Length: 170
Image (cartoon, rainbow, N blue to C red; front, side, top):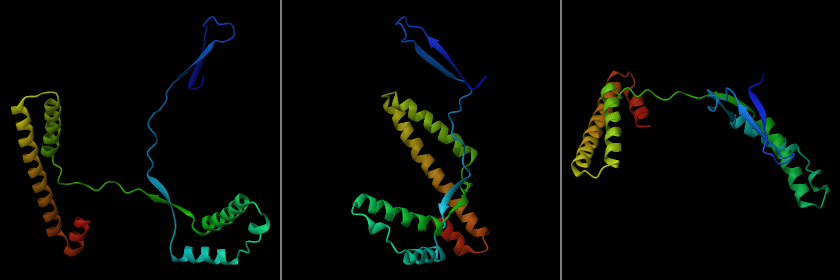
């Protein structure tokens, strides 16, 4: 048996019965790609492309009076040269950078902040709203300080301090 089943639904309208399809083991999540395809474009590939364009006679383009055919012919030639000169290459997608400044306490506080937000959204209690605002302000200060300490520690331990500073800024 396949990954689906089909059964008729008889509605009593002569030959106008409906069909019902049931999908089994249907995965809604797309597969995660660990790579992406990009064109290899550098000085060498650009020069190769320009050379191929310069050797083309373009006679086939001007053999008709139909503008659409002329454009399609030009585009076919142009893309043929471009795709042959600038091939696709597979590039691995880098994982997200480690955010070492995120501690268990910060994660717990962010979760609590989210719960407070939901409670405030469904309430008109001014004390709760003020508590939420104070909590957000304190959490922001804690996160800012954690980032500052983490980046200062990273720069302090680095052998090339200038490069580490610029990597942090970027």
